[in-house]
Length: 188
Figure 1 (cartoon, rainbow, N blue to C red):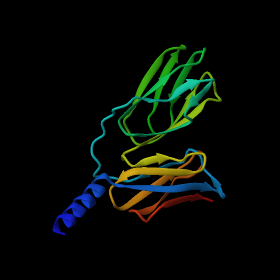
Figure 2 (cartoon, one colour):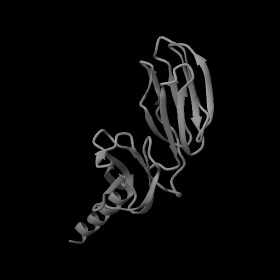
Figure 3 (cartoon, rainbow, N blue to C red):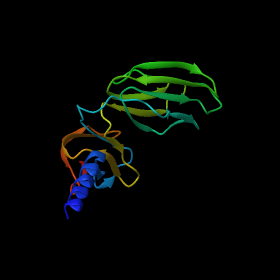
């Protein structure tokens, strides 16, 4: 009996160490929101170490994906997979940069070293636009075409949350993360 209790306690501690999942839905005017970025404040989170490449591609005269959520300190590659030159830049808010003109088959990289939203454009093709949201937390997600999102491995507790979507204001609130709570985001 005592052995089972100890194993149960070990299992509980392992589950807490791995964290919980926070799932939810993002909606605006009763419809699902694709590409909403949701993140939780985590002032005591461990330092970020990038282990995989992150890409904001240029293909078919558009950026893919149109919305990218990353952790502060992430280096983002901007490969040009079109048959024409591009000039990727961001002059407002967030990370300000201008990668200059570069031809098909090449790539340039920029490190997003500060929090905030960067609106990314190509000055050669004015219809091209993307958003990069750099957050200072490991706990973030982007909603899918159904408006659903999941933030994984969040330690149980109460967090301040933030939610942003293209064309919408940033919403703020608090949420309890445990096995019985979800987070529904609604823009009016």
